[in-house]
Structure formats: structure tokens, C-alpha cells
Image: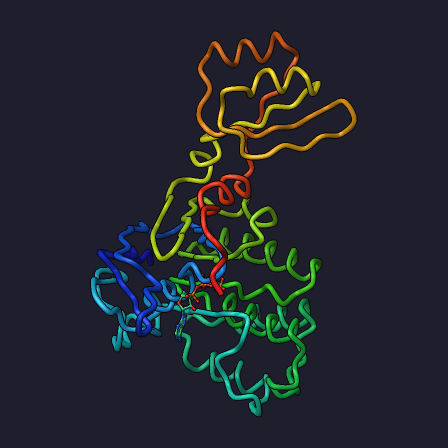
Length: 293
Ligand SMILES: Nc1ncnc2c1ncn2[C@@H]1O[C@H](COP(=O)(O)OP(=O)(O)OP(=O)(O)O)[C@@H](O)[C@H]1O
């Protein structure tokens, strides 16, 4: 089942703080979406509205054409996990998993058991006694094994160490291919996960500043590599997003598409052109402010 997600003028306020600001978007579903944003940009608030954890202050959000808030038929289809587990500290991990098994119509116990082993999840511990990585592992098992038509990982795996995070990316991709569904992953570890995303949304101060297919976003800029002096000559007059130097070689990232003439000029100057990293674009689109606290 593919459920489209639509927000129209969605606004979420906490007192005077506007966390999501008249945001409109449409996700057709059946893809892995990346949601990128700096700290405090409104990622969790947006995802909480989609998952019916929070009611919109104004505007609307729908999942499969229906408003999810207080709508059990829809919320059953949505699994929202974050790096802290929505359970009491004194609950045993195995009880949290048993509850998910009862509540989640698509729960796959065999898959859950395999994930428990792979992530070394200690099911007899109480949730409050798990390490940060252990809490993330529990979230990841809940998110993956639920096989919910809409599965949302809100920085759920950030407490894990690098090998466990890569294991999670592998599991997510393999299971998504075997059981297609809508997955949204919010993160700021962009370079680790950008290959997973078919579409990327970038949110800044509660507003959507980009939403495109990942390859289209990447084509908005170019990385130019070659001898430093030739790179400097080539990038002069372009919007420079960043540069790295190694000995006499330099790689510079510029924003904006290149003309055929520019490309031919680069080739004859012995320069290599490659796609831009999402990280650089993200920094460029969201840099003009102090970080939120
Ligand atoms: N329960 C709350 N009460 C008051 N303000 C809140 C609450 N939750 C979030 N905010 C504020 O809303 C804004 C958006 O926060 P949100 O958690 O949605 O952003 P985020 O992008 O998920 O941030 P982070 O990456 O740091 O988790 C921030 O200014 C935050 O301080």
C-alpha cells in the first residue's frame, strides 16, 4: 500500500516559537525520502505532525488523503521512531517489542529476531538501562520490523556507532527493496546516507527550501578538480560553496549549472568535473543564520 503524504500551509507553534511555518509539500510515497535541516529547523515537528504526535496549529497534513490526528486507521499505518524510545524507563525491552508485535499489523517477528541479533539488542534489560546506542538499536528494530506503510526514522540511529549505523543503512535498503514502502529519514549525517535517498527535502526555520530528486539536487552544482591555479581561474565569477587543497591539487564546489562552453573549457584546461555533494548544498542553503538552540 502506498500512502501519499501532503501538507498544505502546515504551521506548528509552541507558544511564540514557530517550528513549522506555512509549509506545503507532497510526497507521492513508495520512496526513501531524506529530510535535512539544521538543529531546531523543525524536522521533528514536521514529522510529529505527519505521525499524528502533534496537531497542526493551522493548515493541514494528510496521509493517504486523511487527517492522521486521532485517526487510528491511519496512525496504525505510520511508525515514527526517534533516538529515544517512546516507552517507560522501567519497561523491559522484550515487553516493548511484544507490544509492537501486537499493535503493528505488518510486524515480522522473524525479521525482528534477526535484527535483535545483528544489533546486539539486550532484550532482558529495562529501557532506562540501555546505553544510548542500545536505545537507538531498539528504535531501529521497532522501525524496521514494523514494516509500516509509512516509516519515519527521526535521527533514530544517531546514537549508534559507525559500524551499527552502516548495518542499519544496509538493512533499511535491503528491506525496502524486498518490501517497498514510504520511508522518511531525518538526519544531519548527510554524507553517510545521501545515496539512500531518492528524494531530498531541506527545511530551514520551518520552511521548505528544497524538495527534489537527489540527482536533480546534486546537478545544481559541480565539483571541479585539478591543478590549483587552473581551478582558481575556472571558478572565478561562480558562486563558490567550498574548496579543499591537497598539495598542488584543488577541488572546488561551485553552485549553478555550467554551460556547454564552460564544460569544454574545463576539459581543455585538464580539469575534472563531478557532481556536488549534498552536504555542500545543504550548508549553502541553510547557512545564513546563527544555529538555533
Ligand atoms: N515541546 C516544545 N516546546 C517548545 N518549543 C519547542 C518544542 N519542541 C520544539 N520546539 C522548538 O521548535 C523549533 C523546532 O524544533 P524541532 O525539534 O522541530 O527541530 P529539529 O529540526 O528536529 O531540531 P534538532 O535537529 O535539533 O532535533 C525549535 O526552535 C525548538 O526549540
